[in-house]
Image 1 (cartoon, rainbow, N blue to C red):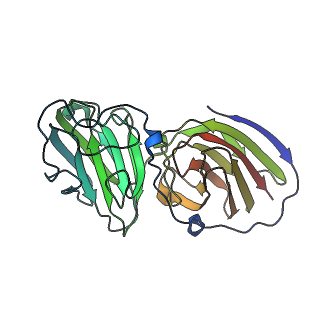
Image 2: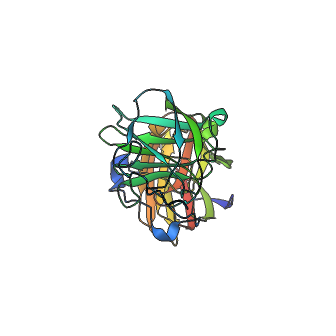
Image 3: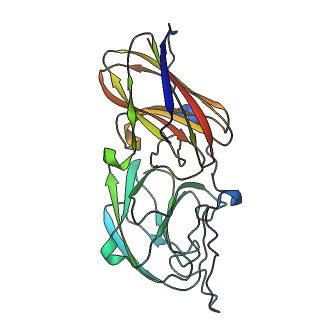
Length: 304
C-alpha cells in the first residue's frame, strides 16, 4: 500500500540531532511464526548428505572482499532454512568478512542458473536462531538485493533452493553504491516549508524490504524524497502499531553509507529523528522496520 497523507502548519521547537549510535542492539527478526512458505526441509531421497561438506554452515565457502562472480552445483538434502521459506532444497553457504563498511550488491545471472534461488544474508551467524537476518528473499531471481556489511562482523550469504531442486547457479557480487532504482522510492515528496508538518500513515504485511542502514531495516519500508530549499531543522516522529518495529533514517541515496542519521525502537513503539539540514538539495527520509512483522505506522515531519 502507498498509504495516505495530510499536512498542516504549526510552530516547532529547536531540534536536537540524533545519530546512528542511538539505535541500540539489534535482534534477529527470524521466528517460526514468520515462515511464509511450507517448503519442507530435506528431500525425498534416503541420502542423509554430509552436514560438514564445503558450502554448509559448518564449512562455508570463502567469499573474496572484492567484486566477483560465483557459481556452483546444488544437489542432495537441505541443512539450512529461513523465515521466508522456499528453501527445502540444497544450498551453498558463503562467508564474507568485510575489511571496511560497504554496501554489498547481489544479483542472479540467469544464463547460469537452473532454479529460482532464495537468498539469505545473516550477520554474525548462519542458522536461523543465530545472528541477525538482514535478507531473506524468495524473489532473488527477479530482484537484486543489497545490504550493509560492517567491518568487524562476519556475513553468511546463503544461496538456497526449493524442495527437490538441483542444478547450477551463478551470482554476481559487487561492492560500492547501489543505484537509486535498487530502492523503491515513494511517489510522494516531502517539501521543506517553514512551520509546516508532513503527515503520512501506512500499513504493511510481513515481508522483506530493500533499504538497509546502520539501525537495521530488513522489513518493508517507505522511502520518501525530501526536497530541502534552505538550511534548517527537521524533526520526524514515527508512531507504530502491532509488530511494526520502527527504523527512521535520513540519507542522500539508496546506499546505507549515504545515511546521515537514524533511530530505531521496538515493535509498537515510537522512533524520533532530529537533524539540521545544512545544504539545500534532495534527501530521502525512510520509514523502515527492524523486524519483518506486520503493522502500521504514522509519520509526522516538522520543519522550522
